[in-house]
Amino acid sequence: MTIGVYGFDGESFLRRLRHADVRVLLDVRQRRGVRGPEYAWANSLRLQSALARARIAYEHHPELAPTTELRRLQYAEDDRRGVGKRSRHELAAEYSRRYTAEILDLADLAPIVSALPDSGTAALFCVERDPEACHRSLIAQRLAERHGVTIEHLRP
Image (tube, rainbow, N blue to C red; front, side, top):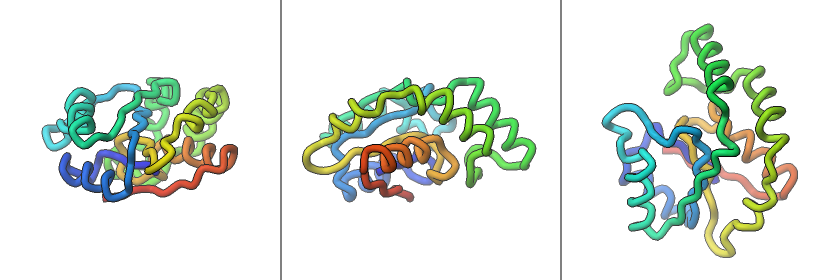
């Protein structure tokens, strides 16, 4: 599974995870905070506390997070297109190319795959609503192609 922050509140987010039988949330954010009071629930410590109460494990995988430089590259393309981070619908081609070459191609996903729960499922987590607008879709695609993992994108 993959899931983002935008479009959810804390309660609906947890409900969506439980409905999908998510047993572990794999946080692939570099900075584990989200701006705006409506998304305070998604800041790392609050999120981890809520997940623990819901009996959903939490893992942070900063090695899969885009660098600040890569995020700036995407923001520049967003500005050029006149879209905001919360309204982006796709990743810039150059961002996808560089993320794949600089992060994903160097990452060893085998330990993540081997640690997937025996029952239930895992969810890659970042902030963007649409997986196509987020690097988690690139990770998911790689997991599907090279490790035979079935992917479903959870949306609000």
